[in-house]
Amino acid sequence: MKNLKVVVFMALLSLCMLGNAQKKKVAIITFYADKSIDLSEVDAGADFIAKNSKLSDNPNFNLSKPLNDFHKAFFSNYVGEFDFELIPEETVLQLPEYQQYEADYGDYKNIGNQEAFTSVEGYKVVQSYGSRLEVKNLKPIAEALGADAIMFVRLDYRFKKTGVGKFGYFSIQSSVRIDLFSKDNNSIFQFSEIAGSKKKAVMVGGIPVMTPDKIQPMCESATQELIKDMNKKIDRLSKKVNKKL
Image 1 (cartoon, one colour):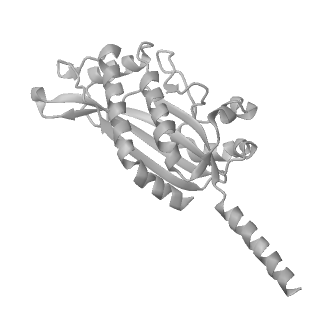
Image 2: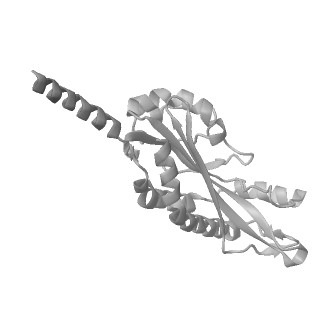
Image 3: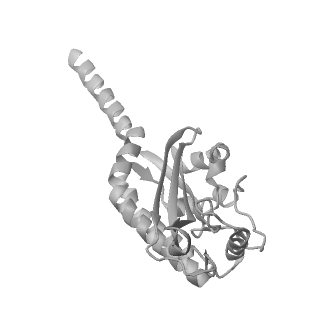
């Protein structure tokens, strides 16, 4: 009888340990880029602001390539470093509840009637500044997916000026923001990283030439530098995330 109790105790202990060892499941809910380039780091006059707005309205200004490059790197280089189970993209994107979801802070048309954001194909735009409200609204989807947590991934771009006056130049910086929340709306982790383009802007009258063929390559260059920086820092980042999970 004593031996039987020991066997039962060990079996229960093993089950508890197995349960604790199970990886948390995470679903990526959004993966997108903002088409409006941030001017907060530069002393932008009215002409600069107007041309920047016109650029974001231009249908030829397309951030799909740099966004997809980062998306590919994210899944190829970064996801495997985290100690959680990532729910397959197709499972998330094909879920009827996800396809029917309308975010409170989602995509919208800008003044030129163009999409203000670019998303990886299939993903909804769910803006990060409304993520706490969105997490609450997304709980039924997380539960339908069997997810313990949901992740938001967003790319942004901004101008950066180096130097003084006519001796200065503009470049583009690319930044990524990653937010991870439990399905019960508790913040688990927030991370951001930024990197600058190697390509520089052609200047006319003290401001960059604001055309897609001049600015888009700078965005692509900045994204490649961001990917390189993330490759160097993912080990440290993943350790922080894994501790919180």
